[in-house]
Length: 170
Image (cartoon, rainbow, N blue to C red; front, side):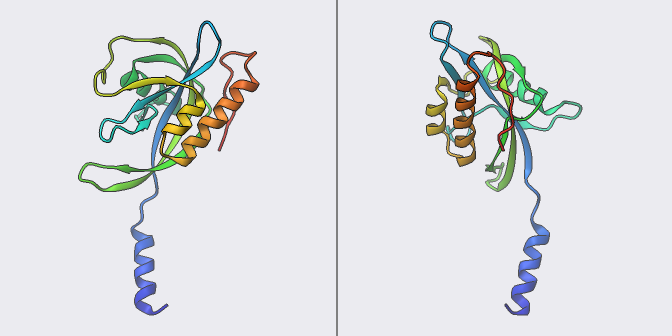
């Protein structure tokens, strides 16, 4: 590699930003009659892709509280998120103006307590309750697919202990 190539490579490294950070919730519940696990998927407002509720850092709030807040704002979910992350995934976030930035998402398991009929983003997204396997099939991000599958396996292993899905999956 010549001097121009080295300078270009060094310049690219210097200008790269570290990944941005978001916080998200895998909202989960069990069907009353069958006890079958369901997870919530919502559509993104811009592209209509299937995603989970997530948002940016909020000063003074812990990551799991941010995940709870986003679940409320985007889907009308009231519940309790575990303080420890269940796992992480990365994706390229499209920003205003079309630029894409690497974004790391810290995911918390959130046990749903209630669903609200009115919430801030009502009408801007579709919401669907599906199995972990179906969620993994619908989302685009490979690491999020793996999180849903791991979540389903862990839930099956802990079926006799409702609400105790908290282990890290990195």
